[in-house]
Length: 183
Image (tube, rainbow, N blue to C red; front, side, top):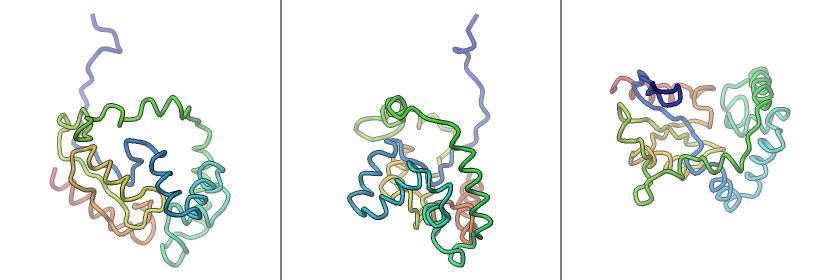
């Protein structure tokens, strides 16, 4: 009899969609690219995540996730405070980054194509959405994710990082709806 660890699970999966996802190689290479492009923006990302300022500083939180001033993105100060509460709650979990780096999906990617080893087993064409005004995930990271899932390119939507919130939420929702309708 098979042990619980060896049993194959039947998962009713229609598709895989990634929105502004950390690329398979992780944050390290992307952070280095940011540092080479803009020390100021890199500092904002480091302050927001490593120093956890995104939890307490509304301006940093707004810049990183929602694209600037309230009148630009439709996210009120009250919304920011609510999201910061969620972020604070989520910081309870910690990650051993050195162990995590050994388990990144890119470690198992095909060396020539960059494709995931499981990509041919996916039930449908995956969706990778990138935001045109993403402060956290750069275009190269989004393209890496698309390549990993055997796509030529991500779908770019006019939005900041959090594509499902703010005034531009419909852009991300429309891209998802179009993909779902094609499944």
